[in-house]
Image 1: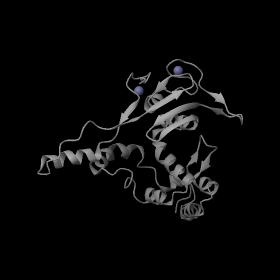
Image 2: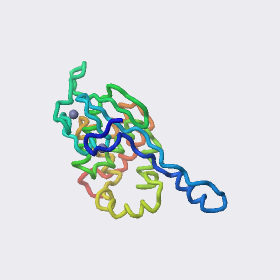
Image 3: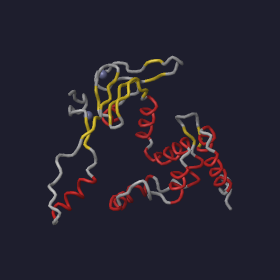
Image 4: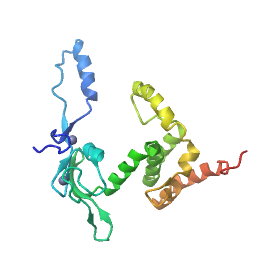
Amino acid sequence: MSICVACQKPLEVELEPEEYEEDVQMGGSSSGKAPAAAPETVPDDVQLNCGCHFHWDCLLEAYQITECPSCGKNIASTSPTGTQQVLCTLNNEGGLQENLDILPLLTEESYLKAYPNERKCRAFLEFCREGDMQAIVGMLQGDNEDSDEDEDEDEEMADDDAEGSADVGIDALLRYQDPIGEMQSGLHAAVQAQSREVAWLLLLLASNLPAAGVSA
Ligand SMILES: [Zn+2]
Ligand SMILES: [Zn+2]
């Protein structure tokens, strides 16, 4: 098997051992279960068109717009419609995908690396694009309620979050416009996705916002 050119490790990741931990705990009691074997792994392999292989995270870490971070070759090409694309062969938990254009994802991740506190706004936009009403409502209601199921983690992260995203209120989410997506707002996204429910929800919420710059 080939290795990642960035970290020199095999092109696979271990699955989160959630169920596995429970088994081990129960194994200590009278159930008599033997501890489970080594954690399961899944492929995590991005092959660029220069031939270099990366872990997805390693590629994001090292990524420089249109050059392979390892060999420096130009990895961008032009699609039949004239737009720039970065094709790769992706093999991960979701299976094998050939000729996958990862430029939108790479652009998104590079942007978030530069502006990490916009992560929440961008997630909100993504939900609007998908017309995912439940996720939107959850996000607007209680901040981290369904993003992290582990309560201990939530508490630990609370301090970090306080600085970055605590000031991202509903109004900021509603007013956010995508700087790398033609300044698209959540409402634009919902309309484009033909998600009537989400569009109405956003309109309703927006109508309750005080006009910018005017104090009530
Ligand atoms: Zn790696
Ligand atoms: Zn390369």
